[in-house]
Amino acid sequence: MNTQVNENIAPIERREGDEMIRLSLMDGQVRVMMCETTAMCQKAADIHNATPVCTAAMGRLMTATSMLGVMMKGEDESVTVTVKGGGPMGTLVAVANHGDLKVYADNPQVELPLREDGKLNVGAAVGSEGRLSVVKDLGMREPYVGQCELVSGELAIDFANYFTSSEQTPSLVALGVLVSGDAVLKAGGLLIQPMPGCEESTIDQLELRSPMFADISREMTFAEKEQLLEDWFRGMKPVVLERTPLAYRCTCSRQRMEKALISLGRKELTNLIEEDLGAELGCHFCHSQYQFTTEELKDLYQRASRP
Image (cartoon, rainbow, N blue to C red; front, side, top):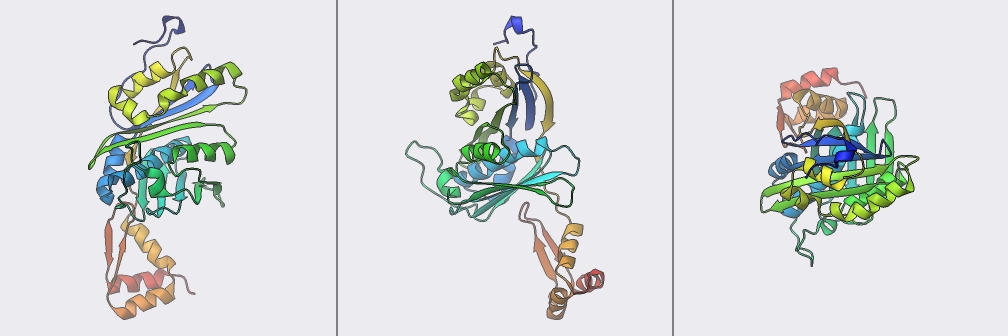
């Protein structure tokens, strides 16, 4: 269906693939971010050989983190979100540099029974006895750090709680990853934030429409994301402000691993050199392995600062 004629707004251009769409509603009264993250969730599942419930958990975390990442303005700025809920998955970490995302979990092969309603039990896998932490590297001396207590471990309500309590921005957050076996059928998320001065009548409209966003990944299997935006926000003057491609992309490199070894200091490097077995470093996010010979460790020793 098309948007109302009296709004005089063209339909949102359709595009394929993972991306973030930023919109405004009611002449800037409301900020909206909607994303599709299907491909990057599938890549995360493949890299980590994740079970369906862990794929859903990591996918939700990446989806929400992508919203924070796209909000960053500087080219070298990044955001790291850590979830420690006490569940069997252990610690979950997602990192976003604008539209580039990566994720890992301590135990991504956890298997749990479905909930009574037949859905994946993400809350039990993540746990709810702990914290959600957000570290924003803004290129300054000290990063911004925000934290909040976990509410459910399902992550959508936890991120809504973070935005409301740590960033003082009341928010509605919907996250979804629809998984069938090893396949991610659809994944995406929605963030709605009334801006200062937003009229009560606008907030009332959003509250009335909120049930439509509850099962977002399933909704996205039946309609294109652009069509959903037009349908969900009909009559609220939706205007697209920006579109950002999203992708699972790890920035690890041999040079970064060299820096990690150098940071160990000369004492630790001496121990490695004396063992004469070289060293192997692995990346948590993409599982790449980097080998260093004893001779290479000796070179790094010379570059290391003295204790």
